[in-house]
Image (cartoon, rainbow, N blue to C red):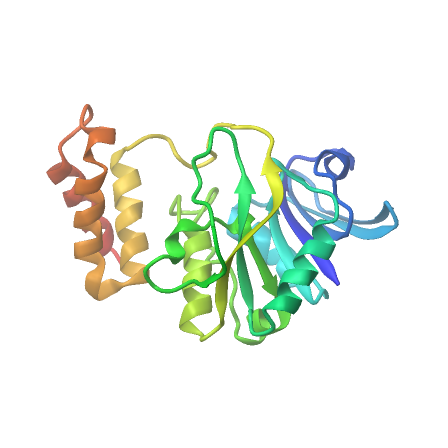
Amino acid sequence: MVEVLIATMNQEDYSILERMNISSNALVGNQCNRNAIEHITFRGHDVTFYSFSERGVGLNRNNTLMRSKADICIFADDDMVFYDNYEQIINKVFEEIPDADVLCLNIDDEPRIRSVNKAVSRVRWYNYGRYGAARIAIRRKPVIENGIFFNLSFGGGAEYSQGEDTLFLFECLKKGLHVYSVPVTVARLIECRESTWFKGYTDKFFFDKGVYYACLHFSLSWLLGLRFCIKYRKRYKDQFSWLHAYRKLIEGMKSV
């Protein structure tokens, strides 16, 4: 059984299910200003809305992940529309790759800004950072049994503004789970909305990036940070120098 785990905010009705073309079981994590649990049937499938008065995308995803009973879970955001037969497609991929614990999928966007998987391949330490949570499907049992959840300190609404999805994949690899990238697309993005966490290349952005690198690879964090600051210096050159950015990044590393 496949279950979609949807992270969203301020939903007042069930119209999100129609917008996203949900045609499987689903759990909706609805962060808002009330507390309620609602069970409904949509297109013949079981859907539960968890409305909690709290904030943080990692906490939201954990709330649905810990309550799921499905064999396979797909993480989703509310700006996605799933293609017809996505449940059958995901089931088929897991059947064809029986040792896969985690799949990193393609997602259609316009204009194209996300990397595209062109073949089935293992995701390793050097390329896991390119995948957001909304491109991830998992076998729930090995993830739960290894105690893998989203870090509550990172992501939109948390103390540090980025990286909860990458840290999730990092933990999967660290615990020995088999992660594959596959040339399979089950959804598209329907809007290019303003980021809930990215407010420009500010001092806080680089400080948070430093904390993130320190949590991933403490011994290599200074090198990864230096590479990032130099590689993307053209994006923030009108605000400050790459050296200033690197100093803020180092401050973040030292705070861990």
